[in-house]
Structure formats: structure tokens, C-alpha cells
Image (cartoon, rainbow, N blue to C red; front, side, top):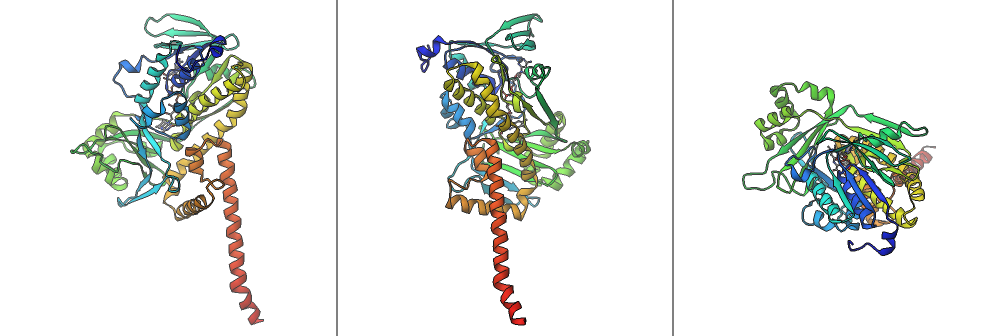
Length: 454
Ligand SMILES: Cc1cc2nc3c(=O)[nH]c(=O)nc-3n(C[C@H](O)[C@H](O)[C@H](O)COP(=O)(O)OP(=O)(O)OC[C@H]3O[C@@H](n4cnc5c(N)ncnc54)[C@H](O)[C@@H]3O)c2cc1C
């Protein structure tokens, strides 16, 4: 028996099938096994621990919500302190190659961490496998399911044969294009909206310097805001950077030839071009196809007491608030808290999960869309910097009442909906204060002057 599993918990053990052994599915396996349930992960891909491939988006920003979930299964330390790279703020690169650092939290010193997606997934799969209650079945693609009965059909991609499986609870952690969610969509009263934004991205890797050091400051998330498009770059453990060019597809399509690409980079991202080198930029850009970005809002997240969707399957979002994985990890933490509250009674846990989480899922999808505008455009504006300054002053003076939006999202577990309403309240307070200040100034300066004239 794994330490932390009490006898009372083992008595109520259920069969849990987790569809998808990505980041959120593997973490869910740890939580459910810790409670003594029998868990099987069914993963479409082969075991990434046996492969050398990196997949897309090599590194991810991990923040408080994700860390809290990792901490609950004893994995925070190994991922943050041994493999995470501290990012203390945004480093803005303007067109003239000037740099400006904006700290994420100059008051409490909070920061986010860059971690390797692959490493994270490997650590989570290893941790799940350490529980005797967990089995990992790779090369299993979910084809269909009877959701009420907990029955599933998988294609074994090694043998080409169909396999049947059954569980008391199916957890759909099968990502943005979730098959479980599509099966749920056949049912009445399930709402689902998917939005592709008109922008795509291309991943580009910056090598380390000759002295094996970072080519740019290592403790920052680097941003090149250019209004309609932008670049971002996160540090990796091996001292390289992983960058992304985010731009409307019509802009990406214009970059058809090496010459067009190099001219574009000379005009907009000349310092990045210097770091990556012309040859490498052309090679990487043309061997990768621009990727699409999708946002999913659906409701509810469960079916009766037998199915629940989590992570990107429930709320895929554009990556601009770096919250997709963090929110997915928080889903599992919330599920675990509800399992505790309702004594592992799925009939109570799952509806409550939908009730609490759906609106929050929609809220973070909206916030992620908003942050794209902030990152590529607003950060360069004086009004943004003034607002940031006022936020920091008020946060310093009244840290428990005035929490800037970024801090609320990244450094607290405030519900995502509350993060939005809190920001709306702050906007109102600042607007009203500004109006009062203007009227008062007017009264002090202009009224005596008018009186004298009369
Ligand atoms: C460019 C980019 C940058 C990002 N940066 C960040 C960041 O900095 N911070 C952050 O928090 N988030 C970030 N995200 C979001 C993050 O990558 C996702 O939110 C996260 O990977 C979701 O995890 P998941 O386990 O729900 O889904 P996935 O990681 O997609 O895993 C789903 C798994 O299900 C499997 N699967 C799919 N279909 C089936 C099937 N039919 N049967 C069986 N298995 C199946 C897949 O093979 C996969 O392994 C970023 C995303 C992108 C695109």
C-alpha cells in the first residue's frame, strides 16, 4: 500500500479509467491512486519515456495553481527546485532592441517557473506508475463509449484490434480534441462552443551561447510585442530558449520565402535574429507548419456519476495566460477536495465539480484571449504602465484587498470568475477616483477664477 492511503479509503475503492496520459491525466492517476482506487490510464500515443521526441511547445510556465496540485502528490519540489527555471518578470524587447523588465510581483516577489513539458509528463507518469493501484496502457485510442454504463471501446494501435473496457468512473483527460467530449456532445443539454483564433504560431529554438550560457537573460519570459503579432521566449534547463512567433495566418502566409522571412525578422525582431542566426531561423521556420490555436467552452463537465472531463478536454484555451496546464492541474485538486468533502460519492462529486468549475473554465478562456491583446499590444502603452504602477502602489499599501489581475490569476487560487469581477471592481474604483480628482482639481483651479471675473 502506498504511504498516505488509509484503510478507510481503500475500502471504497472504485475502478477509474483515465482516457489520456498527458499532463492532466497522469496527475489525476496519482490523486485517485493515492485514495486507493484502481486506476488504468489509456493513452493513444506510445510511451513517451521510451521515445526521444519532444512534441510541440517544449516548455510551459508553471504557477501557483499547478504547484499546489503537484505539492499535494509530493512532486512540487522535484519539479520546481530541481528542474524549474525561475521567471521573475516579462522582458520586453522593442524594435530598436531596447529592453525593459516588468516584474510579475515586485511586492511579494512571486514568480512563475519554466518547466519542460516532456520532463513534467515523464515525472508524472513515473509517479503514477509507482502506485501499485495504477496501470498504464499505451497505444490505446478511445473510439467510442457508453457513458452511462462506463463502457469503452479502444483501438489497440499495436495490434489493430478493438478492446473493450469498463470502469465505475471515466475521466476524460484526452486534450483539446477530446473524444469523450465529442461523445458527450451527442447528448441533450450539453453545450459546447469551439473557437479557432485567426492567429497561429511557429515554434523556434534559440541555441545557448558558445560558453554554454543563456543567449538572453535567463530569469525572464521574453516578449517582443508588435501590435498585431508578437514573439515570446522561455528559458530551458539546457540553457536554450524556446520561442514562439504568434501572428495572424495572413501574416504567416506572406513569409513564403527565406528572403521574405529574413526581411520580416530584420524589420521586427532583429535582436532575436542575431541570437538564432539566419540559417537556423530559415531551417526551423520552414520545417515547421504554423499551428492553430483553439478555445473550448462547454457545460456541463460531467455525465451522471460515471464521466467527468478535465484539463484541455473541458476548457482548452489560447496559451497567452499560461494557464492551460495550471488550470487543468487545479481541476484535479478541486476534484480531490470534492472527493474528500463527499466521501468519494461520485453522484455528489461530479455535479458539484461542474457547478463550481464550468463558469471558471469559461472565465479563464476569456482571460487568456484578453491577455493576447495585453502581451502583443497593451504592454507597450503608457496607459498600461500607469495602471501597472497604480496596481503596484495599491497592492503594496493594501495587499489583501487590492490584488492585481496577473497576481490573482498566477499567484492565488481565487476563482477565475472572481479574478475578472475583482478587476472590474478595481477599474471602477480607479475610474471613480480619477473623476473625483478631476472635478476637485477643476473646483480648486477654475471656480475661484470664474468668481473673480463675475
Ligand atoms: C504553444 C502553447 C504554449 C502553452 N504554454 C502553457 C504554459 O506556459 N502554461 C500552461 O499552464 N499551459 C500552457 N499551454 C497549455 C497546455 O499545453 C495544456 O493546457 C495542457 O497540455 C493540457 O493538458 P491535458 O493533459 O489536458 O491535455 P494534453 O496535454 O493534450 O494531453 C491529452 C492526452 O490525451 C491523449 N489522447 C487524445 N485523444 C485520445 C484518445 N482518443 N484516446 C486515448 N488518448 C487520447 C493524447 O495523446 C495526450 O497524451 C500551452 C499550450 C500551447 C499550445
